[in-house]
Length: 354
Length: 280
Ligand SMILES: Nc1ncnc2c1ncn2[C@@H]1O[C@H](COP(=O)(O)OP(=O)(O)OP(=O)(O)O)[C@@H](O)[C@H]1O
Ligand SMILES: [Mg+2]
Image (tube, rainbow over the protein chains, first blue to last red):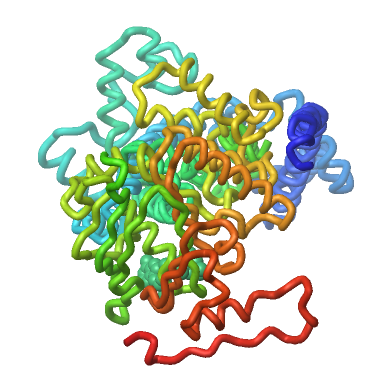
């Protein structure tokens, strides 16, 4: 008799969940370690096989052969590449990412300056994208085929296909140069530069912590355009995906069942359909955020935003391999971290994934 | 409502879908009158059974339109009722059980949440009260440990349990008419009979009417008082369940002949003959 098994069957499901939890955590930790090893190994090898001479970059091409050889040994370049890699890993765990040739600063110090700029930009852009794109996508799905749906689709198409640098230049020209509504390139006016204690490196947060509202406003004025432009891009993408997911869910049988129950349409949409859409959106939003954290070189260039994308690119052009390696590792760690985060969130929202 | 008044009057119901290839008539001129009884609707796949049921609830797909000479539920004119009025009827007075519990339960809401919701849409009661009511309902559909199942997720249920839960959800506001659209065809045979017995018991206790939609003419014949036979969107024959074996219409006879029998000789089942003349 099936109903006799009811209770015990559920019990078994629950207890197996308890057994699985530590195993899952161990599995995640292992895959994290493997990913990290793979990431560093690949970037390391690529950095070493590049036709750039790290010794020359340090000593200059007029140096005496003895000096050259000394630095060559100093850097461990006479060792096999495997040993060099292990040595690099060892230094990495001590927080030593080497010294940037370009800035003459430890790479770690550089990263602590450049990465927060990207983090701030990417976070605000993602927030804009989510807060705008998700409701628009839901609205478009609910009004499928009506003019509002078409309008949202056109906005999405525009936001997704317009070149970032073109839109950036245009926006700078009109909103900054002509109208003066927003601040220009850079993170902050030179006048305010270095006036707040960098706690997190995020100027908005640091100035808010210090209650320096004038600085906060100034930084916001600088952030509005680049974040808005990156935000429009993710808004367009998220609106399109949300619309698609929402239509898919609205066609399911459980939606019909909810309507049969007499549930008001608003609750059908948000309580029933959207909760299921949320499950699917978590992964998408995570990926969007992660790709923004990589640093968008074009936007950073147009707006003179001192972010990680610019840092890595210009280091690459200057054969500054320690800096490239360090930057890549930060980006990689972000990717893995966000993936793990969205995985966790996913488990939290979707009972089937637990 | 007077005792003798019919619960539901359907006169000349039509359902049409707009498709890229032009309009598709799914239900064409269906009429019947329903008292506090169990009415079966049978017919092959695509004959318009489900769309008839959904039209009664006003829940057609986006591209669907309906029309009728008369459509009245307990003296409420369904053709003239506004969306609010119709929604109040939905669940509260007319309800529907769908074919497959695997798809008709929301996967990210607990069983309890979904029963409580069905109750609270129509009754202005506290959460605690609704919870007690939901637990009682789970017991009424013969679920052993209601407390456990209340907190369970739909994917943790077996098919039979899922359909019991669906029955609990749809019966909790005590509707007067239940439309069951192939409620047991996703279940295996042993569970099927248990669920049917349960459904029968709940309907009898509440004095509710039933429209039972199925492919299975013999099942419907043994379970219902009266049977409508549908073909291509029309009712081709209406029969009392006990006179099913003496059906005259060739389509009905065909459906009867297509049912496999336990005591059969194992020969191939005959295929259905169709005649355009049946559509008049
Ligand atoms: N949204 C729609 N758009 C176009 N045609 C539709 C739509 N929904 C249903 N139909 C058509 O309406 C007809 C009747 O469908 P219905 O679901 O009522 O069949 P049914 O008798 O319930 O069949 P089954 O036994 O397979 O469930 C079918 O031919 C189907 O193709
Ligand atoms: Mg059907």
